[in-house]
Length: 179
Image (cartoon, rainbow, N blue to C red; front, side, top):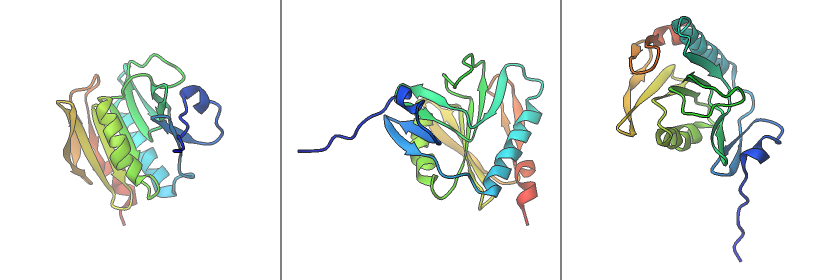
């Protein structure tokens, strides 16, 4: 007789202690607190986005917020840019931008599982940051599929097709961490 894996829902997820994500009913423990460079890069990206969007009343830049995709899928991206979100407890619609900062323990989940999930949910931009390389891979949704816009280390990128247009300077994001 085959054993059937138990599936969980958002109602179960809300009761769990610790940091978890729920993907297709499967609970996934989040990694322990990120390394200091991971946290510093996250703060640098948050600062860059907040600075560029300070006059935009439509959009919010958030960190470590639940994105409830369905009753059996809840993820917690490192950083999101969302516009016109109405729910105060968790995100209910696809953010315009999601940033995930890679760690060894989350690399496969971020590069494959979340990549496919965010693509299916029509997140406009997915940025995967590699702290060891001080590089960001930026993907843009085009005709329902992610198209790689490039690898960014010192370059600028213009986000022109979201509610508040802005340019992100990756040199500013990574400058402090170069040796």
